[in-house]
Amino acid sequence: MTHRRTSLKTLRQDKKRHLRNLRIKRDLKKAIKKFQAYLSEKNIAEAKAFFPKVSSKLDKAAKKGMIKKNNVARKKSCLSRALLKITQPDKKAL
Image (cartoon, rainbow, N blue to C red):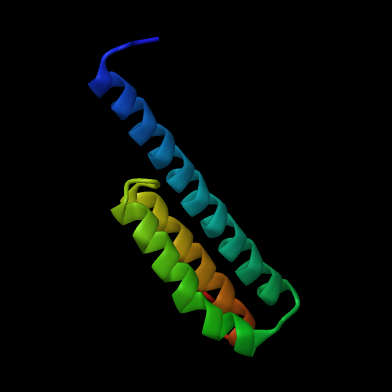
């Protein structure tokens, strides 16, 4: 354990940042699961309304460095394809 004042301050900052990062990741996972629940229940109106919120949370997580940009793009693409598949079952979703 370090005893320098700046080191102790850095430890406090790291702890705050770690807790913030955990909260962001937890909220993101909850939002994705909620969206997937809407899809599994075939609740199209709720899913369409909730998709921009999930997309926004993913973008914010990427902006803060929680998730890489390509990972976010892949997740958004997968979720939007799933939504398209439910809303337009007669057409093939790409």
